[in-house]
Image 1: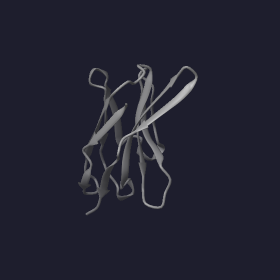
Image 2: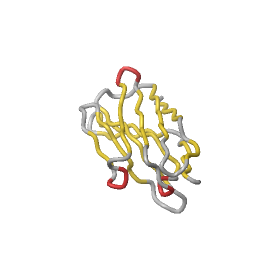
Image 3: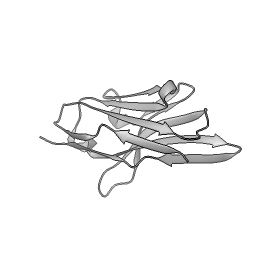
Amino acid sequence: QVQLVESGGGLAQPGGSLRLSCVASGRIFSHNTMGWYRQAPGKERELVATGSSGGSIDYADSVKGRFTISRDFAKNTVYLQMNSLKPEDSAVYYCNVHYRRLSKDYDHWGQGTQVTISS
């Protein structure tokens, strides 16, 4: 049973910062990609940032230069440092771990953490 537990969401002012954390536990294939997605009301879930166990990192264009994803492999934890926050960053942020094992794709999701950017 894979479990992802997120923390760090909340309310911040425009221009402010927040840091999200996600701890993964359970049986997870070592070659994986962990990342963050978000979903705003009335919109589809979208990729924010991902980081693979091989070191590849990907960002949505809308967050490049403002958000930084990092991983602590020893702790099975992924972080998202969010700076220069904008009201349009408001959403529920979900942690994800993806891996492929024996030709089958696996995706696991956290419960989500609310991020609200407002003055």
